[in-house]
Length: 344
Ligand code: PBG
Image (tube, rainbow, N blue to C red):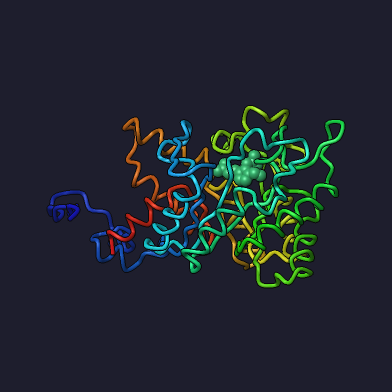
């Protein structure tokens, strides 16, 4: 039990402030703090992103994300089982594509037998009850590491969208529950919704990476999926300028109009103002992605003994809830869920 800090009763001779209002009264003990608590994190708030790699019985460490590994399909299925046991509602899949399968057009993205599709099938066979979310974007599959098709150094928006629709379709066919386009092309939500509906996938949800910023915090993720070295230039012609807020509102508005069921803000911690404004403006299911760099910062500091990793993790997750998020994609999901289970 934590030690309760009690102030000694003021001595009559001690200076005494004439205060009618003393906010500290509501913080005087654990029960009082519990009683007035406004927000909480529960396992229902968590989406756990996982990295998939070819092979079997493989767990490959990612240097820039201590504690996170690339998992072969069988190991992802074990992770799905762990998620189910921990009551984590949903897992998100990201492939590490073999470099030999990457090309200029991201052809492997639309292969119905690609790593992600095989993983979805394997999970759904054993644990049909867990939510499976698949990212839609070409960067794990392109030799240049960009999310779209390129011609003469320019991203081809509409041509890319046509490929993304096909990518979403093979994922839906494999049994994916939530399609999550992270590419930031214009018009992709509407095109994907129409493509899914035409193919009979009316019930497949779309979580739009609606306000996705061109961020330095994605660095470790690009190591994890093996696109960091390949990436030429940056993604600033499609991902948003970190200086902007109104633009996020416009992006969310469009994605909702085009049929998004849920929207996401990404990265998370440096963009809590965006989470708050999106939630207040649209009152729709709103998620935040605590991205790889945010995970890495906390994990690295904790591993160095510079901060209490568990407390920093829970505090950061609470911050998302306070900002108005309905849930968080976080690499801390299993640790957080375990901690929440212990607390009962
Ligand atoms: C790919 C994608 C990225 C992330 C999720 N999907 C990286 C990027 O846009 O370069 C980042 C996730 C993370 O950093 O944890 N479109």
